[in-house]
Length: 586
Ligand code: ADP
Ligand code: MG
Image (tube, rainbow, N blue to C red; front, side, top):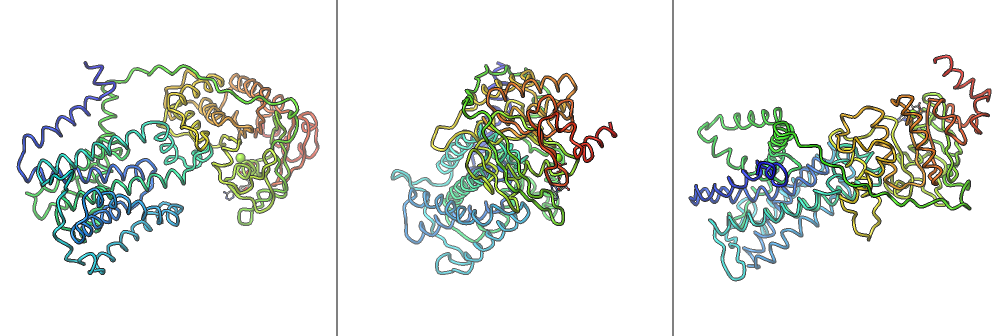
């Protein structure tokens, strides 16, 4: 029994649902039923807001506007044209989605605080239209005579019928949200909100994910707005005013912004709070604000987050058994390709203000080659990797992968085309498990039109990759608690999950002890023998020299030498610019 509650359906969740069902049965007055109906309507709006604010991590302030638009569509068509519920309800969902799509184009690209401001502006424009366009909206007075919901010929009045309808829609919305976010897509959102660059580098199109989140949320808000006017039976500009958005945001923060249960708890709690605090009279707003602040300080992940943390402390979960490995079938390098060019960067120049980070660089990597890239700090090594992977668009030059120009392509597109990378400064998400961190890169790999890979399959493939790098025993741990050397190898496993043709490693041996370094070098050699091409940036010559089949040395953004490790070791310019300095400092 106890085990059942702790696994599958959780104890607090079961308790919460029981309380929610008991509430209207115990307090059955028309007033209580109405408050709970409104709470359900807010829960629906917040469930939708979770997609963009919680999962995608963008502070959009349009959810209130989508709610208001949905409300006006139903309000106007219902009261003026006597359209039926199915038609008005569908349009109340569709129009906010269309509006979201229209504003997404210019707005989604903005930096976070401009994004918040721009979305707030859109809400204000809608409010102005509702106030000024009196003929249509009734202006500040609004419209009365909104019909009740009529379904299959039956009128659903307020009280139990409306309560059940609203919570039925909440349940359906919750099930849909859970279904969408519980698998690999949820992991993709997690990576993208905590580390957008890493997300793009594993082939995730974060623009598309954000757009999907905004559109989904708009649909939920529109549905909530429609149900709201059916409950109130009138419509006024109140539905477009800022307090609606503030309430939605507050509910998401208080409940927990990525958990379905958080949306429901936040909505039920905050709809009731004003009622409970009514005795405070004039001091009500102060108390409300103080309670909110307290919440944010003591439960930064919302009430549901706090509950989850408490539960895992109280009943630590047994380490889950890692899945069985499902090895990836890597394409083998054809003998005819070995040694031919895979990557060609020609005449790459990149400036940052007055700094010439790269100056007409030429670099090639052949199929199955391990190219070592060296040079003093600031010589442009990382910048070159960033240009090749699309993080920077070079001022001049072209990058070609297997005959295809990829200069200026999006980071995620280049990743999908076959170039994977690791980062000089680690880019893992602390509270993701190692397994998820690697598995998420399998999503980016899925081609359009083919069915999405399941989480279970991605986990199996991830554990196989972790095994290849000798770190399978860390699979179920969270990335934040790992030693530096393990983190480096998790990043390599994540990069390999893209099934790349070329892997760019930026200082992979940093933080590894000598045994781990030898181990990593051997594994990289095996990968290269299997056909993977590697470009390895390293300062550690004991690691790099025996590994590299060819080396390139940069200084001040230019190639100063190129050749076998032996020629590089003896090259006068390399010793002058780099190796000498390294030897002196060693
Ligand atoms: P390396 O990896 O070889 O140590 P980098 O490629 O990181 O060198 O840096 C090359 C030069 O470009 C340095 O002078 C660095 O300060 C500059 N640089 C790199 N990235 C940026 C950036 N995003 N903005 C401004 N300057 C940068
Ligand atoms: Mg660097």
